[in-house]
Image (cartoon, rainbow, N blue to C red):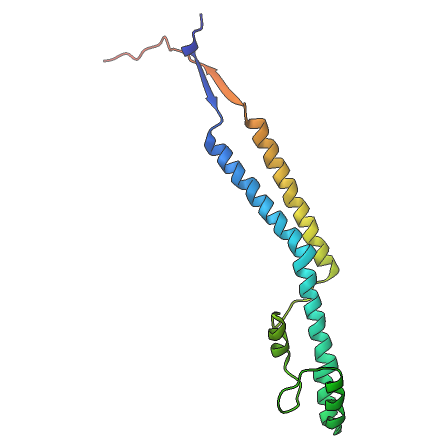
Length: 159
């Protein structure tokens, strides 16, 4: 005959749920960061890099060509009509100064459309991780393991 004390029951510990909850939170944070980079941060940084290239080509390189060709006064007049910021010596500001005025990094990185799209793939993968971990937590809520307590009829001989 079995009594209540003959059965050993082990439920899932709170430590397991805490660990799995932290893992779900980690996946969620990483997923949101990947989505943020793909939707906002990386396209914005790519636009800054494109502006840096445009400034280098249309302002700094044009200034160097005008100086070399001896048409610096014409270039300076055009620069004033285009609202290009010049220093007191009527030279164009270096990119670092232009970027600092905008609050941009000095060397923004240009990202390809493929790299930006990959951020969404990784964000989706992280969200799948969240779904898997939450499913495991829900499946483990009422899970327990039980075994019958057995007593051994064999005793050690003392001697």
